Image 1: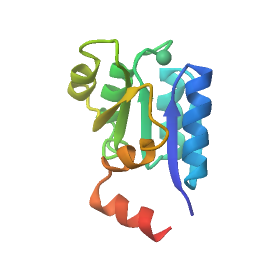
Image 2 (image 1 turned 90 degrees about the horizontal axis):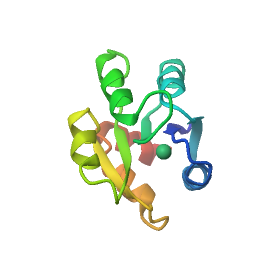
Image 3 (image 1 turned 60 degrees about the horizontal axis):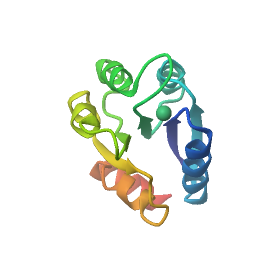
Image 4 (image 1 turned 180 degrees about the horizontal axis):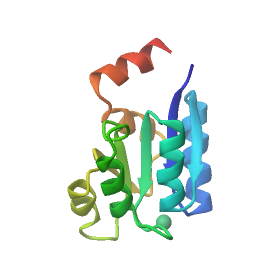
Length: 131
Ligand code: MN
């Protein structure tokens, strides 16, 4: 059993790179290219972690985070906002919306997984280690 990661990201190149890094590190990857699909895929698949872009079509990342936090089944899932360095205030707003943490774009492939896992609960880290 692999841990499941949902990536909500509308940029093809970012999606490709994040998927590549996660799969290389033994995650099962689910992809959503807009916010609404992201919420639906989260409900269907109960991912262990959600990577959330902020600038998204249909529903932005803040709204997505707020919706996920309203759900009894989904509110415990770590949400890592992947925020643009240029967008001042994104990080704070993402945290206020319910994100567990954030990683700035452009992401560094050498430490991305480590940074993402730094937002995991102790219980999730234990599961990660046992896989
Ligand atoms: Mn985007």
